[in-house]
Amino acid sequence: MTSDGKGITRFAGLVFSFCAAVLFPFGCSVRQAAVSGAAGAFSDEKALEVYSSDDDPELIRDAFPFGLKTYELLIAQDTDNRSLYLAAAAGFVQYAAAFLADEADMLEDDDLDRAKALRRRAAKLYLRGSEYAIRGLELDHKEFRKKVHEDPGSALADMEKEDVPLLFYAGAGWAGTIASDPSNMSKIAELQTAEAIMRKVLDLDETWGDGAVYEFFIAFDGGRSEAMGGSGERALGYYRRAVKLSEGKKASPHVALASTVAVQQQDLETFRDLLGKALAVDVNEMKKWRLSNILAQRKARWLLEKTADLFVEYEGAEHE
Image (tube, rainbow, N blue to C red; front, side, top):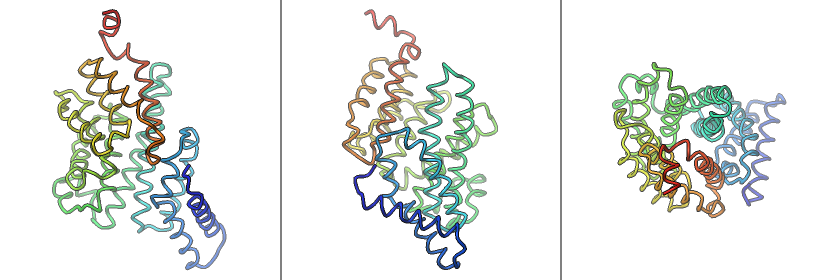
């Protein structure tokens, strides 16, 4: 949790104000003021850091659904609030990625049915997050959904830097939906649209989210073979840029490159080196990345445990 006690008190107080306004039939002006106040609290960067700076992933996993449904309640009361759409989009995409998709990967060998169920749920929540991002974009860019399907280049041409956060979650959620259900061939073609959105993010503001878009492209290009349009060389370039922008204080770029390019190329030495770097990150140095670093290190340890399954020549390498 954040060390700012006043921030937590303000956050809790505004949530209570919102609940009171919804539960009791006050006048419309009072109710709208409470909704606006709660919306500001929930979408405020400092408030959101209450989640991202926590050191207990299980606590956040359990708390997240309440926050997500609260965003939806607030949006129902304030349908023109761009910040709320962004908060909802980010929340659903992040929850699907951190607490569903990764768990599915880790469970696949031991409980395939559970892993499949988690991926189906992840696909739905990725999509919900993407939909909220698109609804937020449509406040200023009418019929964006329709236009981006028909002609992504034209639909994205008038986007500006201020649109980057919503574009990021629209593209990331869209891609996550497809990746969670690769058997749905009707959706695979849409991956090019998701890629176009993310490349627009890259063009408009590569530094947003401390280089988050580069981490997306590490996985996007590194996780596909060259025959499918991937490129280990491009992924390596994205990795270097992500590390530079985060000043080496994020574990996730190392994990992303290790789990994609290093495995694809069967480069055991690089695999271990990258995961070693991920585990060497001090999770307490940057509070805003504490939770994501803890989760990335958890995945790094799991990948190391799976080394024998990931590398064909593992046993031979161990006995050289």
